[in-house]
Length: 180
Image (cartoon, rainbow, N blue to C red):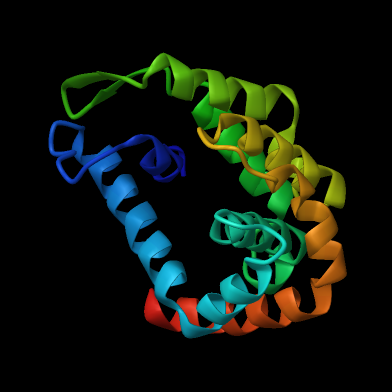
């Protein structure tokens, strides 16, 4: 999961310099992003939300789906969410300096800082609550290089929760079948 999360920090198409396990995580992250970006239901939802969240509706949908996945975790996994998060936390805190198949690799400092902040503030366990969604959207809003209103994403979610949730479940069914 750490390598998948790292996918947002890799720019360009050449990431062959990364250890193989990290390359696989980046590739999976990009495949999922591409799938969600081109899914017809998500495209329709993005167009609808664009009025309220110009330029960042797609980012908001990613956050909404993460929130809904955490909130409804037991419908998609036989593992408890807290056990999954505890496993992520255990490994994430060890991912500063790693050796993959004899290759030394150090995640960039800004990525390490993100991981530590996520763990320190118990971010993943809070994501299933609206508070966690607000925390994620506000934090990400500050990191986006252009002016945006992503900090208003929770209010937009609450106003459109039924439709977003319906699209989420339909998307998840399609995605599970696609990535089998």
